[in-house]
Length: 235
Image 1: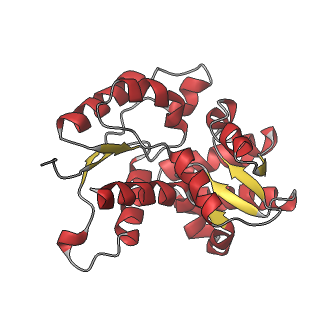
Image 2 (image 1 turned 120 degrees about the vertical axis):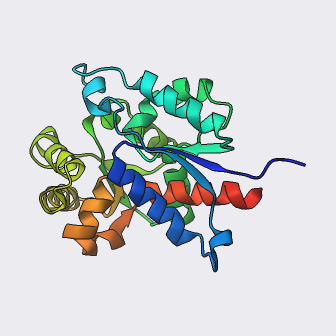
């Protein structure tokens, strides 16, 4: 008899985004009682070095700290692992190599969600970190799926997205939400018809500052939560 399924969550990137992801998983489960919820074990340790700074060449390597979390989750009996941080997937291959439990890929889950609800002639506005964009985490998979997209300009990244993202991490939701909403609005003004909130701080900000934009948005954290739910249900 196989062991019960247990979802591991490599969190801390950032800690608020991890809590938001767990809330998404809670909401989509459709549970009627405690026992109906997805069992999880979470490593929410925020001392992992900054992923954006590391990819920019100005920060410590976050891989050793992430591998420590992966090791702990495997030791706890996780049967799959979710990472509610888009930029951390730049290290996906290295993390997967060191994990007995399969690691779900947030971009694959997002593309699956986009395909499930196709919009004819949609142009996706990709709200993501400079590091995620430089690694083409989303671009390559969107192109392979035949999906059109555009990304923030360098100026939008410098003046809107990046300070907005770090404001959310500092728990300044009002400032962060305003800046991230302006990032989204800039993409829509340049022709985007649909948004992908490809940084786990973005939905937190938009929920606060511009909830009307959520109707146009796909949330990768929710797509990842749906993949976790499918894993548990299949067990």
